[in-house]
Length: 227
Image 1 (cartoon, rainbow, N blue to C red):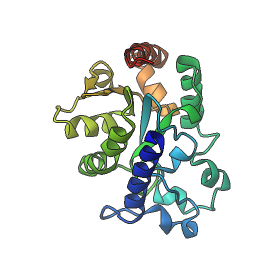
Image 2: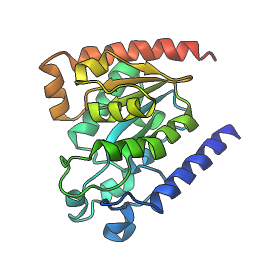
Image 3: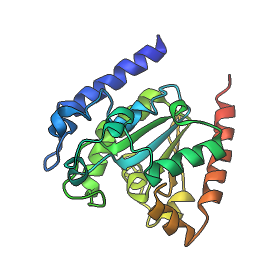
Image 4: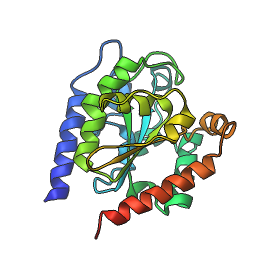
C-alpha cells in the first residue's frame, strides 16, 4: 500500500506539471503532439523511477526548445533520455561502479520540469529554479524520503539549499564539501555528469574521488536506515 501511495502522490505532481507552466517557458505537450509527455514530473523517471530508492539524483532540466523542435526522437520518447548522450552514459557508469546499481533501481528527476527557450546551455534564472524546487523538487523528495539526494551542478544544489533556508555556496568545490541535512535526508552536491562537468571538476579535484566519497557516505546512511 505504501508503494502505491507514493506512486499516486507522484502522479499528482506529474499532473500538476502537465496542467501548469511557469511564465516564459513551455510544457512538454507543446512538442510533437505530446509525444514526449508522461505521467512523471520528468520524463527521465520513465527509466529511473524506483519510488523506494534510498537515493535520488536531481539533474537541472530535461530539454530545451531548440532540442525538442528537431525531428522527434523515438528513443527519447520511449526511455526519457538519450542513451548515447555523455551525461547519461557517465551517470550509468558512475552508478554501476561506485554504487553497484543500475538506473532502474534508483530515482532520477529534473529540478526544472518545463522547457526553456534557446538551446541546451541556455540559462534558467535562479528564481525559477527555486520555484521549481519548492513546487516540484522537494515535493518529490518528501514523498520518496530517500537517505540521500544528489544535486548535479551548483545551480541545482543552491536552489535546494535556498529553499531550506541555507546560504548559497560560491562554487562547486564548496558545494561538494558542504552537504546539508533535513530530518530524513542528506543533500549532496556533485559535478554534472556530462563531459563539460567532468572536465571542469577535474581541473580542481577528482570526479572519481567525489563519487567514491559520496558512495561511502551513502552506504553509511543506508546502513543506519536499518532492515
